[in-house]
Each structure stands twice: as structure tokens, then as C-alpha cells.
Amino acid sequence: MATGRTHRPATRSRGIPEATVARLPLYLRALTALSERSVPTVSSEELAAAAGVNSAKLRKDFSYLGSYGTRGVGYDVEYLVYQISRELGLTQDWPVVIVGIGNLGAALANYGGFASRGFRVAALIDADPAMAGKPVAGIPVQHTDDLERIIKDNGVSIGVIATPAGAAQQVCDRLVAAGVTSILNFAPTVLSVPEGVDVRKVDLSIELQILAFHEQRKAGEDAGAVPAAGQAVPSPAASAPAGAAAAAVPGAPAAAPLSAAAAAAADDDAVAAARKGRPEGDVPAVMPA
Ligand SMILES: NC(=O)c1ccc[n+]([C@@H]2O[C@H](COP(=O)([O-])OP(=O)(O)OC[C@H]3O[C@@H](n4cnc5c(N)ncnc54)[C@H](O)[C@@H]3O)[C@@H](O)[C@H]2O)c1
Image (tube, rainbow, N blue to C red; front, side, top):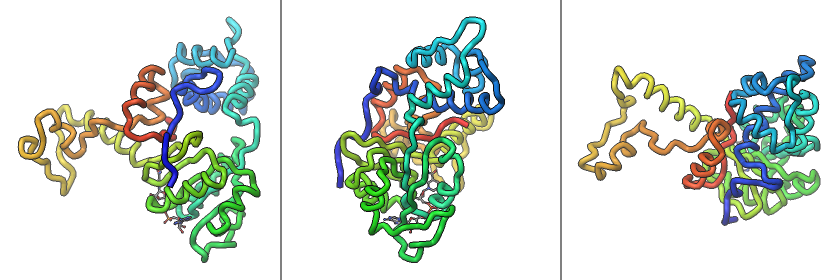
């Protein structure tokens, strides 16, 4: 199994902070919507509101791209789309493989949003021999026996893992050994990858747990927390020192993982500090709605 470092430092090449990189897709989505409506220019305030980011932060982010806008006119929408796309590496075509073509893998294969953003689904791979040759989203599923050849033939550097958790590390190791250097992991497990491989994870249940935490806080002020059915609250005195009691109570996420939504909204330094404290290396990839 591959071992070693699981994520990169807070800054990348050309000195763009990771928190800025995390916000670029938000700007791009808002700008693409403006472009589709043939809006020629946009102010930093309008764009910040559309992207859900504060406008001072947006201006700082764009300064890293060398984009300052024109006073009284704002930013040129088409040019910014180009600049951000180029910065994110989206001006080239990225062949992607999806491994694990069950409910989720098939849904991803059918998602039209990849192709429109420059991600071409080059191959679908599954371990089930019964699926081999069957088309999903018009692409025939191929067997995992051919994984290495498929990666090589298609020049794939990005792999999506949608297998059960128990298979994910082994699939990851094979993808990496075959030349994949970026992985989007949907399986609920932490992957170990060697130096130079980026992993981002999507876990909707974690996002829901964070929402549950906020819901509980909203409701808790008047009602007090009520444990979910079947969950007994352990006695802090019996099982843990007083300081650890809050973390021991079910439903009290004392150390919620840092979501990309939080990363996009927080200050760069705060993000770096929060990342430092995280026990796991790969990065959640769910973006704010
Ligand atoms: N991240 C999220 O928000 C999210 C949401 C839903 C599901 N999931 C996760 O996604 C994964 C897939 O869920 P699903 O509902 O599609 O499951 P599923 O059982 O429908 O599909 C899993 C597929 O993986 C294949 N598979 C198993 N081992 C494999 C291997 N070694 N190599 C290649 N293919 C292999 C199976 O043949 C099957 O087709 C699970 O880990 C699930 O927990 C994550």
C-alpha cells in the first residue's frame, strides 16, 4: 500500500493561497452564469454576492491573478472566465476515469456538468464481470483487470473512486501506480497516497452532520439537546475526564472536519491553521451551494 504525505502545503505554485484556489470555482460558476446571460462587466460587489464571498476577499483573490478591474466599470466577465479557467487548468481537456459503477458511479457518469467544465469521462471501470461491456451513459463499462492499460491508453491523471469503502485504498493504489496523480474520493474512508498525489473527498453525510450541528444549536437554545432514539448519553463522570465530556456526548461534533465551504469562507490564515490541526490529509471537496 502506498504511504506518506497526503496533502500539499497551504500555498501552491505562483504563490496563490489554497483558500483562494478553493474560491476560484465559486467565482467561475457565478461568472459563467453572467456570461450565459451575455453580461459584459460586473462589479466586485455584484460578483462577490453572486459567489457568496465578501467583496474585499474577492478583490484580494483577484489581485493574485493580476486582475484589478476598471474603476467605475468593474471586471470584464469573459476575460475573468478565461483567466480563472486558465488558472484552474480548465483550458485543457482532462480525461477522467470513474471506478465503481454502482448507484453513485452511474449517476456521476450521467452528470453532464463534467463535460461542460472540461472533464471528459474517458472510461468507466468496475470489478463486477457481469457489468463488463454494458453501457452506462453511453460508455461501455470495463473490468478492473484492464485498469492499468485504460489509464495509460487514455493518458488519465484524474481518477474518481466510487467503490465501497473496503475497496477504495486498493483501487487508489492501483490508480496511483498506473500514473493517476489526482483522486476524487467518494468512499467514506481516508486514503493514503504518496508524495505528489492530491486527494479530495466528497462526503455528503459529513456535510449533513455539520448542518445537524447547526440545527441542534438553533433549536437547543429553547428546548435543550435531546439524544436521538437509541442513543444513551454516557455519564461523563463515569467514562471520561470532565474536560472531555462534551466530545463524548453523541451528537456533539466538537471537532467537525473543515469543509471546503468553510475553507472558501474563512480567512486564509484560519484555513491554514485549521488544516494543520486536522488528523487526516485529504481535503473535502463539497463546495457551497
Ligand atoms: N460521498 C458521498 O457523499 C457518497 C454518497 C453516496 C455514496 N457514497 C459512497 O460511494 C460508494 C459507492 O456507493 P454506491 O451506492 O454507488 O454503491 P454500489 O454498491 O451501488 O456500487 C459500488 C460499485 O463498486 C464496484 N466495486 C466493488 N469493488 C470494486 C473494486 N475493487 N474495483 C472496482 N469496482 C468495485 C461494485 O461492483 C459496484 O458496482 C460507497 O463507498 C458509498 O459509501 C458516497
